[in-house]
Image (cartoon, rainbow, N blue to C red; front, top):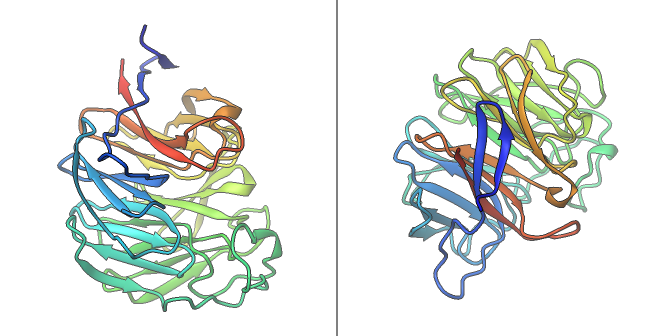
Length: 302
């Protein structure tokens, strides 16, 4: 019997063993992105860092072997450029779908002054005393239609940074705290159809919306538990994996919940993206609480 989750117009059949890896490959996934041709990019912490599948889970190619010390986030922009967040090296990189490097933002290994202990890695957001320059363990990247780049710089910083399409830094905003425009581990970022910059403010259990100039606009009050990332489809539905609670939420662009499923067994869910047929792909733990491994699971509209 099919495993169906969700509710209302957002009901999905769960395809657990969707990805068909080559024999002997280990690929604990960190993030997922999907381009305009429905190629699915799994960014992972195994030997083959970026693995490309078709939407049926068939293996197409891989690249990035020997690169990326700590893969964290991946994003496909409207032109099918593939953007990668290498957290521990503090770099944002732009690639072709085949893995040719086009642009690098950030000096490898440079960590800005935020008050956090720069000899450590991981979730240092509670040590941050002030906002810093790019970067200190960045977490997420999104690209506007103009080509401007937005980076959620969260693990040891509390800021969102804006860059031109050529990688020139033009603006930063944010400081540690819980008020409007403040952050506690900004983890994911997405520019929606309204041109707003949506930021998954993970440890504040909320999504905040800003203009592209950093003006605070709104906050989604949706009882989110540690939102990790945001991906918005062409109909304006926002798909949010709740890292700290293990839930998967679907929200309107005004923050109203459309559907939700999951539980503690999916705690540490980490990424989301959708294909042209309305299927959603979430990065979620391979087993119960405490699991450090993740995989991409496909949810097909029921």
